[in-house]
Amino acid sequence: MKILIWEVRNEKGVSLNQLADKTGIGKATLWRMENGEVSPRINALESIARALGVKVEDLYESDI
Image 1: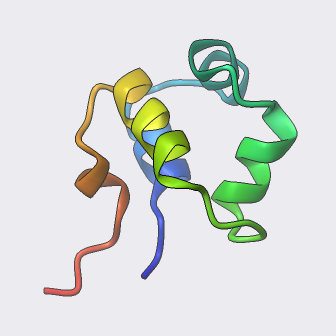
Image 2 (image 1 turned 60 degrees about the horizontal axis):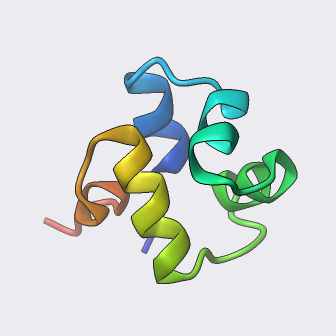
């Protein structure tokens, strides 16, 4: 299942720096999550979703 952090972040007009500041997650780690190099834990996804003003489910590509 693909995680759409980059897509949602860009749709919301939030920079990587801004997301890092809002979540407390390092820029390098966020970049690696966006590029599929690491799988984020649920607490990180919750923090990212909250910072972007979306639900955690919105960060996943729909299979439908």
